[in-house]
Image 1: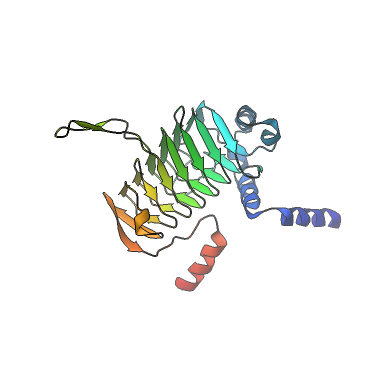
Image 2: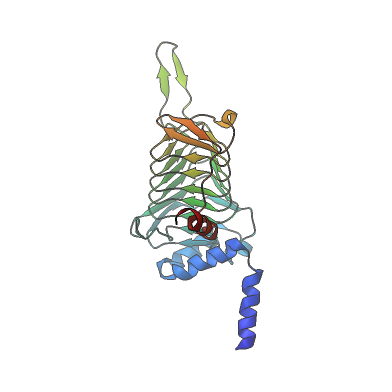
Length: 262
């Protein structure tokens, strides 16, 4: 028994934070995972050496339209990508259907958590690039027609939207000119997007920025620097030098809460 405990401790110490985080979710949400669909998806989407590790875990209520091409560019571990499995108990339910349709290329560089109700669509010849520790909130939408790049430590709250297209052309009657309907989106590292925000085509969000809830963001904000607070419709910079805590590191948030919420 002591030997088994030592072996267990040694194994846990050998794991990275991201691996431990994924295994904790697996243990907690084990019965919410559709293991048959999970196994099918992994071996359908990935080379055998990656698939055998079961990096993707899927819920029962997920509608897969197209698996497409998926590239895992970081060290692969079990449960690193959860789709429709992990829910926010107070606000969401696993009963909300999650839609996955990848007709282009999906690049995943680390842990990704896609909550129930998310609609993810990548069109043919398009690329959706997700960094490490990406969280896509309940009932959100990501629609990629060309290129959407999301950096590390990204968090989007519920009912958010990221589009790189307007779906329709905008016509300037006076100039007799059509404006393009598709333009790439880039979101830097450590960005937080509040609930019910829309990130439109051509948007560039600098590292460390915070988007206030119910904002409509469009345009390139890199000239304003980093760590911006954006708010409004259309969104504008209302404060600089701000930062948001990360749900990926709850221990750090607990320390801050203990200091300021006495």
